[in-house]
Length: 145
Image: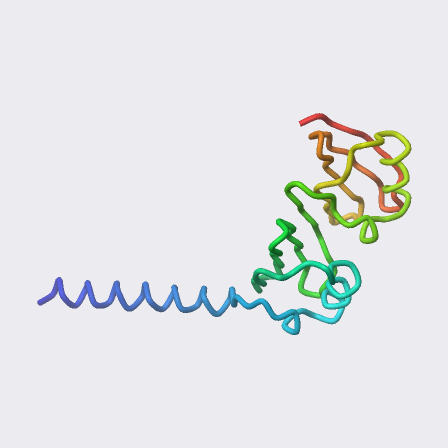
């Protein structure tokens, strides 16, 4: 009898924690759940891409069918854009960074861009090269991965 009570208690606790995590990470594909800034980004820079799902946690993760994933903070500002095989849309990237890549690495393109807490940028190119740019978009350094 005592074992059954312990098993029941453990099962109840497990279901409680599982239900909390589901509420925390609600999944949808409707961009209306995003904050205004994130919706603006989606409409203006990713209107030709179809949303696979959106996960809400501490921020938002938007996964698209074209293998692009965007992370937004809770205010709706994008913190990273990741792609597998296609370029990250250049309109979302600061112009000075796009220009630097075109002038110095023609033929290569950005597959990942992340904003750091200091608002600098880290980009990864399709050739595996990682580059850091300051908050104004000026090149700082590069590192092969």
